[in-house]
Amino acid sequence: MAVMYNHIPEDIVFAILVRMPTKPLLRLRCLSKQWNPTISDHFMKSRSRRMILLPFKPLQVMDTATHSVSELPFPNFMNPGSEGHLIIGGTYNGIVLLVLKDMILYNPITGAYKTVPNPPPSKSSTNFDQDSRWCDVFSLKKGSWSTTSRTLVRAFYIIDSSGTFANGFLYWRVVRGNTHLIVALDVKEMVFSEIRLPLSSLLGTLGGSLSLFRYTSTKFELWVKNEHGMEKPWSKVLMTTNALTGYNTPMSIMDAGKIVMLRAGRRKPMQIIIYDMLKDSQEIYEVKARNLSRIWKLQAMEYVESLISPSHLCSNLI
Image 1 (cartoon, helix red, strand yellow):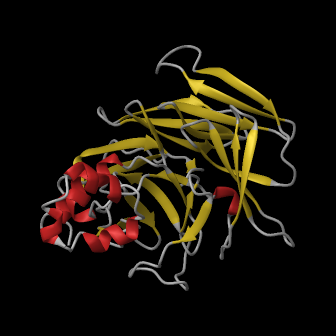
Image 2: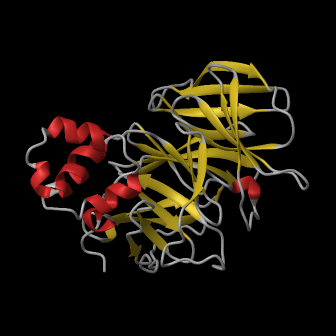
């Protein structure tokens, strides 16, 4: 096969590979030294199809292009009886941060993973306020927690399991007392700021900018964040009538203006609804899941598959 490959133009080989499912490609990488870089470097860089990870047990992935939902095999560090809630902390270059008992950098396609060490214990400080907490930063490049990036932030209850990244800031919905806020972290300067948050809201991105989905029993609204520091923080870009029936829990805002919702009933199959606010249309997927406690806090996550290993992101981890 390797000999035949030498006589086939590379563009033809690429056209064949780009039509193949991901799992067979993993096996083809081992065919020869020529096939490995062709698949790993060239093919996976061209694949930009966005999928949706669902934080169920077992972990599931939705492919909107094929209108399918599939279960991912349980990784070695987790089994169906694992205790605790499964949290998807974020994704980067095809690597997913899973939080169960430990924090795990995981590639769902290859099954490769690395365990992130626990942060160092907080040290007492004369400037430490009882209403403040330390925020620690883990460096993927160094494979360790950075003590120089540690910063103080006022205490709050975090609503979101994962932050939303847009324009150099990480955003979380939080509650302090009776006040709902958005906490924004300037990733470069490591400085926190706060924005007032309307009730019944969900954070996401729209065209790369921070977006806010507001929902009631009668209407949906989509807002976009203005430039940081402006007096008017939000601009409403869309409003539609809530025509969805049943009890639906918003889980995620896709970057194309689609809302991922979970519909769960005692005697009805569990469903995922993808509502397109721009087209006022919906897609419905039936899913199976176990251990869905704290259903109101479940967050879905957009994901682009890749063959990158967690070791490439964090070579210093064991």
